[in-house]
Length: 398
Image (cartoon, rainbow, N blue to C red; front, side):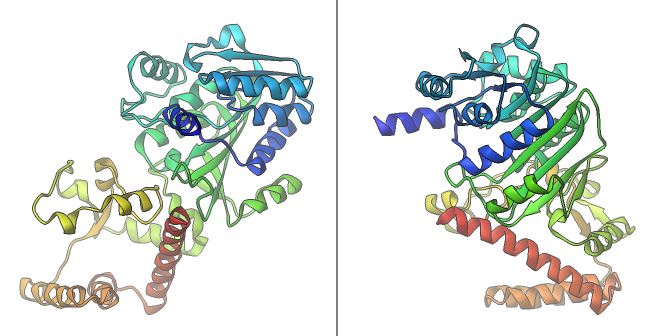
């Protein structure tokens, strides 16, 4: 019975939420837009129950799982809260008939595009288009879910959601973020150094969107180390250490974890004429390498361990690969062959640090003319981001 319930939950894309996260999102949302609250994927009722405790005037919930709706009904009955629970595909709900509401809060279902198909996906993509987002068939369910949710809000209303960090890491995620910025006066994202949703194997943001009907040019991102720091954000009523995730180009999430001086140096290097992108040199397509399978393929256990975005395995889509900056060598062919041979020997000996030093010397020092101080800044930034990635991989494995 428990195994079937777990399978059904994952099939529906449901990952129930830590109570501290529930309290944070509901407290923030009720602080900026109290009143009628909607949870479009209400699950076992923990978001509606938290909203009831904080004085919501009424609750609207929706879910496809009858067991979850039954649990929500019991929870809200105990709280003596006026409520309406809907057993429905959320994308079948009409905002003109059910809205407007003051606050939409919750944890949307995460279903990857391979399983997110048929009429439900067609309705979802159509809804996203109504708020200006043209999502592709490769979009996971959470993206149109967010965009459908905002259509239930009154002018000035707020949206508080758990969302994948894919919001700033994938093409369809950035399209979704742009649509959110076009529909809210302020977008704030809270992110973490480690993964707090081990079952979902997914790095997450907390999306705090306020001022429905307004617009903003960038999302404000605040990185935290521990989930316990959420309560401090609520108490301060402000966000320290903000990084503005600009949508003019391609947002780079990793820069949020670096200081402003390092970000300025990185931007200066990318603007140099020697810095090209892969798409300037040729096309990037999906391919497959066969032959040495033990070298090119992860084992099943390794794949599960490293699956998380931002974990031990770096995953890039072809469109993301096209934007990777590269520096073409100016060395002679003979010099370049010597450099490659030296780096190859170091790698085969397992000395990756030595290989990295060769590349730094040839490309960054000799060719770009970076100072020892600038090189140290870049190396520290690399160590910071690598430590973050591997810390998340270790937390996923634990």
